[in-house]
Length: 374
Image (tube, rainbow, N blue to C red; front, side, top):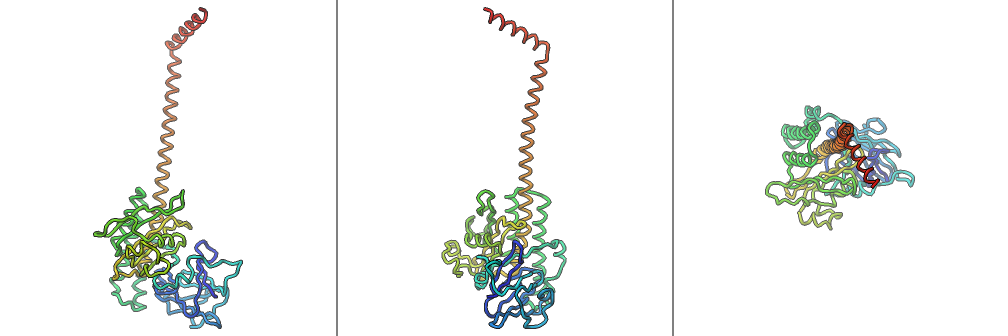
């Protein structure tokens, strides 16, 4: 059975089993492997697995498909064991089969779970380009024009700009450190301004127990407040795998058929993305909507992932700032105690050096001697 290994030889490695027949790659959620990248085409490439071999085809993507740095220009480009496949900035290693000595398929992130119609696990793209530059770009407009999107281009572009403005607002928090708890609630407030959400929660990893703990929650106006109203199974899946999770009908997913929260809350649409600090997952951001008229798209998930990336930096820096602040306060307190102690010792030394104190000591000594003689 052939496989694609995303980001081989890195901590973010993911192994995807290629099913017999057609496998698709692109940024649309209906793909077999979803690639969250602004310049990845909606349907970027196709991989066909047949008894006679595995071939790859580029689907007229904007930034093309490459195998071993060579652009794929034919429909039946043959893949060989060890080939490097690149779609935009996403790189995979193609292997014919997994060996006992090589990297094994991960328990989370393989094709068996990705192929489920209503739920996708998606490796997160790292956003390294400054957000100020992204605001001025029209990549989304160009992509929509070339691929014939049904929605009005200007409205889609404006929606993208609005989302990027929110990301910039989150980034500004880096320059005005606030209490970590206040930052978390600020992030949720900003999130509700642009997305159609019923509930949202932020959970962070406790450094002592290494367990997720609820830190902030927000509900849409008119919906009763319930800070624990989220799917713990979906949250744990995103935390353990480090992948972004999106589902358009969680209650129909076999893996969650025993989840009381999904059934009780009628969770129809759900997204959950990890907060990643370098190579460490420090928490998750979870949102859901119970409306049958709402369906989260790849753009929604891409925005939420970008927000989580920015929020992770904000949270980390804020936490580090306040840790250092508390440490500084402790050091100041200890220094003050030391200064007070030294002051007392100096005052005592000054008193003991006074002539009156010396005479008093001499008188006391004479009285003690007199008493001892008697």
